[in-house]
Image 1: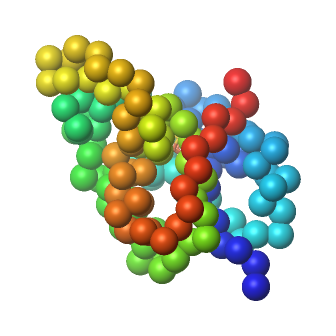
Image 2 (image 1 turned 45 degrees about the horizontal axis):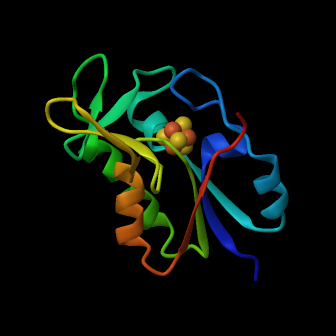
Length: 143
Ligand code: SF4
């Protein structure tokens, strides 16, 4: 049986980034040949394309233009995936994203002071909680 994998859609070449671009990862596409691939983009589902950028402020996903909080809506996207797919063999997530990153999202405190670039995205955190048995990987995609 083929492996089932969940992948950040921008790594697969979908133009779902905030600016309408993608971060296609050709090496990953090659590696996943023969797998059942489930593509998802939590931010596209919540905010559309193009959209304002988001940062993690005091643990919440906050829009940089509107100041609106999107944490719960984004986490809902992970729960929606879980309703359709009970398990994944592996989950490949885009680095540096406030939603998808595993350990490279920019994080700020509640006064907007920069704390570092080692945060986990709000959706990645939820996916880790929901898919405890899956292997998680972070990918940069094209530069
Ligand atoms: S990093 Fe995640 S939220 Fe951002 S464009 Fe890619 S799939 Fe969408």
